[in-house]
Amino acid sequence: MALTIDWRLYVLIDTGILGERQPLDVARAALRGGATVLQLRAKTWLVGEQVAVAQALLPLTQAQGVPLIINDHADIALAIGADGVHLGVDDLPVALARSIMPRGLIGYSPEGAADAARAVSEGADYLGVGPFATTATKLDAGTAIGATGIAEIVQAVPVPVIAVGGLGQHNAADAIAAGAAGIVVASAVTSAADPAATTRQLRSIVSEARTAKERA
Amino acid sequence: MALTIDWRLYVLIDTGILGERQPLDVARAALRGGATVLQLRAKTWLVGEQVAVAQALLPLTQAQGVPLIINDHADIALAIGADGVHLGVDDLPVALARSIMPRGLIGYSPEGAADAARAVSEGADYLGVGPFATTATKLDAGTAIGATGIAEIVQAVPVPVIAVGGLGQHNAADAIAAGAAGIVVASAVTSAADPAATTRQLRSIVSEARTAKERA
Image: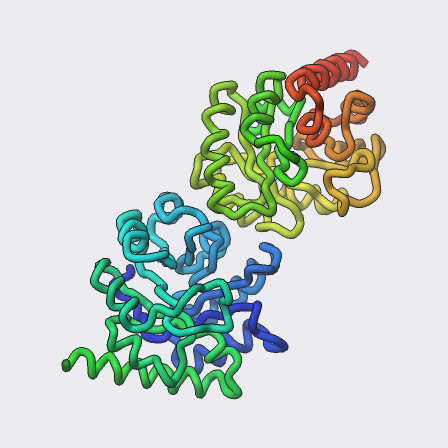
């Protein structure tokens, strides 16, 4: 399944940074703007609340042929029929997630190249690698790794690497030039004055950078 | 599967109230004392940490033929091969949990008789009903329902009802007399001076109360 996914513009709907905005409204705008993947991340929400919003999101993403990924909760992803789950080092180990989710997408946020290679060997379909630049979304995300850090992981693993953290119009092309298959954006889209327009611009930047990279 | 479970003494290993004690040590003592079901509840732990301790617990419970139930996380239960999951009103809905866990035990903590009946119709194998008495373990558990509250739910559903909350040597027999198939104990065992001995006493009290109830 992973081979057929368009990773260019992965929009993270993080309920912790939406302010007054509703996750479904932001998702609709992102889909309208051409988001190619959507993730729901609602760390502080009760599981029942996450289920309800994920169930409402799914028909929207399916209508656009866009994968819906659930942060952390493989059980929610399985139960609602989402396309996958995104895991971190403190979550369900990738190998175990793969054992209960033989067909779903499994994303992983590695801590370094060795951890990245291990996760892929255990069944991760893609990696979210960062932070590319400093970010206000995830204050515990660590030091920015930049283009060099992306390139290092791209060399280390055979799966798509999606750059994450502090990405926006100003540096999206740099992440793609470093070898990323796409970028994860959170606040750049969800806090934008016009989330749909910003999504559209970002997707265009990423597409052009990929074309340039392929020609190079 | 539910029909073959011995629900008499369901020991809840709640990491929030273990103090200096280790979950595995308490579990070993409870199993030595004759616990018939074990639940791991580690609300504040990272999922990865919960997985590690659950994986260590499983061979201990399996050696005694005792079901291991995981609180909240159906994905952990599925991934490690635990016997089931225990859910509350804010968790994964019972029907969805049943859809991803066709064979595992599903427990549910209902809010009233109508909610109890709904959960059973959606696939719950047993109900944890309480609080039987006031409890320090779960401060948000609400007003004690006592023997009357237990009897009401027992009448309303065809699955085993396990009384929970504020139970110990002094009132275990009352819960059984009201129709409970067993009792859930947390601090009564895990904070006891001798958890194994206390488990043994509680199991004996429950067994005698069941015999008396069957004769009556």
